[in-house]
Image 1: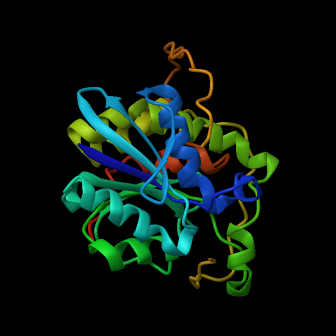
Image 2 (image 1 turned 45 degrees about the horizontal axis):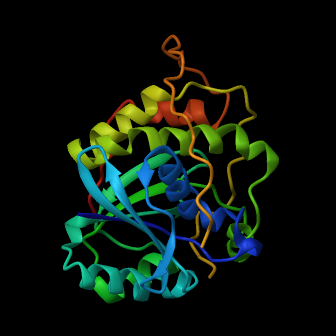
Length: 249
């Protein structure tokens, strides 16, 4: 069994925050695949189901970001899971908005949710890093991640979450490299303004649901291969994903 964890803060106040994109990703996976209703367990909310041939438990910790490891640790110990069975999806300010990367192990880069998980379990679990961009100043990081996505962010956010859900079976069965390639192929560049590049590269981090109506999952019409351009975050993401990005620190 695989444990798929989305990181975020519980409650409606935080639901649309950048820091909650991990929750958003597992909610999209939940909608797209066949899972049981969410229920309270392991200091969080869990649901069970299958993605392709793989039995999965999905978890959204209710401990707030800084104590995520307590919830993840409870679930991992109960099911006697190895670190290789754990996949964590979370927000990454060191990636441009709309870029997706994956890695196994490595440092936590100041992310308090990862730091908490590592303190309870160790570092060598799988990570899916969802880029949200960063503010210009280090002092603005906490407020930035605890603010809602902008309306313009929906141009890349909704397609990216949809692609993650559709292609997550590939991650489980063939690994992160093929998963990233398939997500990139599924997406096409959208006409959005490029995000401004921040002046600072410092790093700092802040900090059920009723089962929604099941989505139909018809295949989307295929489109011609996207041309290389520089029109926005998705275009940038596709250009950068020409090489498999499965770094292991």
